[in-house]
Length: 291
Length: 277
Image (tube, each protein chain N blue to C red):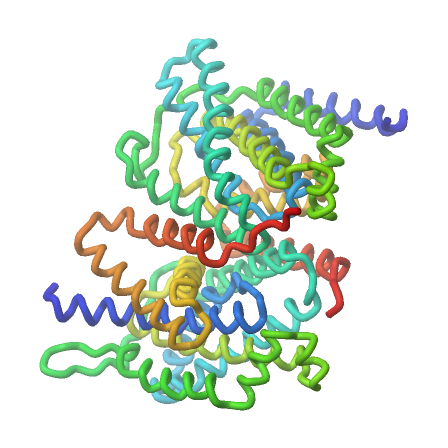
């Protein structure tokens, strides 16, 4: 149970975010903050469940965006948009279920490598398919950015993950991470726990993809490939493992940074390098095992 | 393009993958480490060699300097990044590799720009109208002593002992840190040389490293990676398959083929299954 002061601070933060969603003039940037915030929280949750560096989170964002664009097909009726949102969440989860049944049997650097391969293979395939618009992208997502809906989606993700953090699933995840053999011995399925974390991350990223479609205009497969996954990973790492507020602020930095460094790709890469190196050196020294 | 030109192009690409795959094989089998930035090291060394070439350094001298540069950068990355986190969780090592990869890419982008560049004069030879790239004539010269060194030299015997049984090797007085440094030095030197040769044959851009690295790792896994020769053969096979398939099928799906191949290899050949009771 959070302390009263902490609860008050959180309420204050969400009130400020609501005001930001309602009144900030750049609607596109507002939606970006919330959608990347939600995706970062999803990835941060996966990091805490599996302790694996996933390099395909942006692929699910792309899958969600493309699914939403194809379902809505330019129809701006609220029911059509709601179906598009639901479709993006469900289809991303389904793909995660299929891919995860292979990928999650790998671990450590091999998992990261496998997720990278999936992400790049998907990009290449999408660039070659005619119905997704190929490398020139899909321009079917023509609805306006919806800051309030994006805020509500972010709030839902935040509350869901806060609930899961205090639930028995979180305990199972800790057990699976700390002692997989022990967890198996008491009947916890290691693969199932990892799969749930992976699918939930994919569903959140897919939902965020629906909002991404509205701000991007043309959906290019290359936009949601490896580099975007690294961006999300950097903000999850910067925000702290399973730290919901930290994830939000990191994604805020990411969204603003993406706009600020749009013409300075080299500087952006060096900043990402700094985040990854500092985090790995700090965390790696703490978790060293002796020979 | 006639068949002979196609074959030499395929073999050049295969040699490039093969040389890089040898470095990956050393790192993965002797240090149990996947160095994510190994491909980017190739790219960085390619750019540095090109920079020296434009300053007037001759190609013959660059042939010696590029492995030194690669070895030095690789040694420094081990000393400053990988050594402090030795024995840490795989996620930390992976993130360190990604960080190094971005560092090399960002530095190359800022210093040299994103425009594709290549060497103006090359070490390629020509016999009867057929162009023999530097990769083709240099790789066999390198591969034979390297294979002998790996199989017979006391240095590599110590490295293999460390990979087989680290605890036993330490008890016998072999230094684990020294072994890691030597492996990084060797693999870095190979990546450095490969970067120089790649710039002679193809175009350099800051983004090529990641893709080349992943393909070379696939080649290393394909070949088994237990010796330089097997890693090299894996690379050669991948290069041949990639070039020949590109001439038969739409090249847009070619990279997808390599990634799916690596996924299959990861799953069926080197999977470390999660421990279960």
